[in-house]
Length: 312
Image: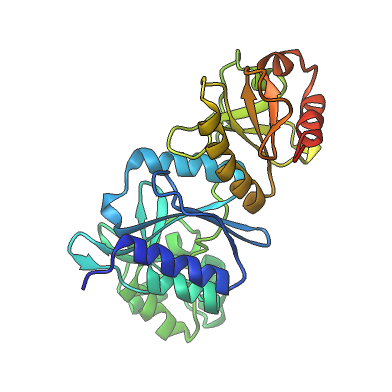
């Protein structure tokens, strides 16, 4: 019987909990299914039966959120096209890694990371260029000598040593046989995602005027993330639900994931609303009136306001 996505999500959630992770609720209508944390490692995960079914728009949003939280985006699935995902192999979809359940278990339980990257041209590995050069010189081999032994060009060996290209598996095995040592890198799937691009924000945004970079989202149980551009202040990101004329029942329902995700990510969350019916919080989530946000003089004043209204 085929494994359903819900069963797969449940198995992954139980595994993470057993291995000491804090896990969020499951958000099936979101760009991510769950968020998990162990110490400094934050995972934003999407679970799929077929990794090719992932939506590029969802992936782009996961990447933006991961960058804000210094988290690691990850797809876990069972197959690609009509083939099962191979264990100990990393696939990529729209720029984030995808692995089988077996590979995920090996990383979480045994701290064993894969070396092989599946690409359109086949299977490849990253060569430790510094180590390759050291052992080549130790064996008194020229670039051409080693190239001849590995049945590749001199230029290819040069590129391996300078980290310019990946090697196919067969060549890597041949080089390791010649040099009698392991020369490949593990793939650090849990490295925090970095896009190297500054978060762009509408200059008319009230949070932006206070010095926050703001990421608006559409496929999450919140509306936006705000992170101070001045990193010297060492403040965690803020999770926000913004004024959209929502009724009381909806706002109370939205407070649940805000609490959940704030706990997992060690962040504060808040509502920005106009409704005077709500005083300072909704089920423990701070309420900031739109006019209060507009009148805040600086980010420190705003953050203090949020923290003072927690659980009031």
